[in-house]
Length: 113
Length: 112
Image (tube, rainbow over all chains, first blue to last red; front, side):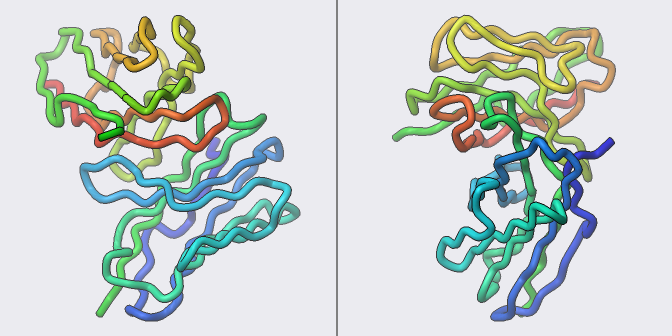
């Protein structure tokens, strides 16, 4: 049973526009959420995180929104750039995250010129 | 230059052989983790260690073993008991349990 779901395997966005990647979770014990970016044959790179006491966190072009009642989070990238083309993973942890992360299956973001 | 290193990048082994994947970090992180990624799948947790000489099973520990004798090192052994060992293996470390995890470059293991 998948506890973290990324229902869009891929997403195509025009350069300069906003990219919105979505993530749903089922475990109400999750209290810390992260987004990672991954290129093929490389390790994931940490992008941004949010704890359950917040509903928004911003870092440059990246903003993560958390809707606890809907068990939904999203990553907004504005404006989208060619270098943003990668697979994006949503991850979650419970109880402070000491026991490792639970990942979604990823969304392949393609930025078109 | 601080970071997490995994070696080798690519590894080939015959079926039935044990193989050990290396993970080293010089970030002075207490916590270390092993994940595996299969095509079209997210990362799944194999083992983790919150402190030296201690480690815990993750979601898919069967067929794997680890050790944590030094803070800097967290090697993973893929044993012959692992039914589907071919995968991309990723090591991560964090300053402490619950802190943001940072990943190494990964090792692609292919069992022939």
